[in-house]
Length: 274
Ligand code: DGL
Image (cartoon, rainbow, N blue to C red):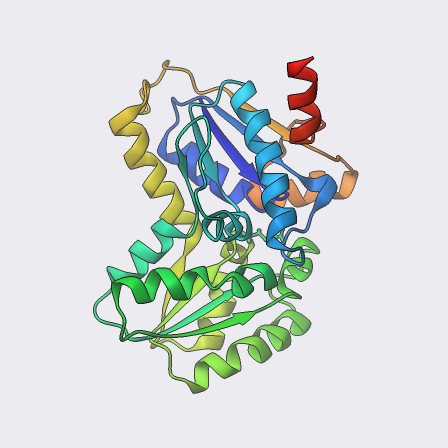
């Protein structure tokens, strides 16, 4: 089973892409809607939440964890010596791979949450492989709330996207990394605002393709054969009517969500020891 971990409902874009690529694979989604958003939090806090989410999914039987959220992935990658009980695919590494597979592009724009940009992980990973690349990263805190409010191509969203992307556009970036799984819903708008000369790189398809490759090589049912499984379970740490409709927008159809509570790691360990 693949466990998909996200800060809320944005990761349903990844779950949807994975469902299309690996129809026969069992998948369990966990969105931490009760503590959303992660993008305005410290990396210590995000990593503590991530540990709880991973524990939950491993307990449900996940053999692979997919960090659908770029913000969580960035916090995770900036933590030295990270390791879990099962392997994982993060959302940053495959996005950087995809970016660097483009024909030489040395001026790169990155747009994401405050925590993602603050982590500097895109700069580090890109410059490790291409020291000459110049990275211009910009946080865009208003885009996620606008997207969740369904304002995908409204004047206010166009104006704000333009304001965020203007500093990258004047640097004449050749690629723009959409470093947030929500942005897939406004890709045409971001492409218009950055200009058609810039190639837009989507973290959602990058992570989904990377998981498919992993599953085919390492997991039973990884080829996505019909009848090999294909169960889907969606957990959220808070469920409201609004969240259900945001989920529908992210996934493209209504989903049935189950409520769950995550255990702080130390408490769970104390209980296990007693
Ligand atoms: N969707 C998250 C990401 O991919 C951002 C939302 C949040 O702030 O939790 O980075």
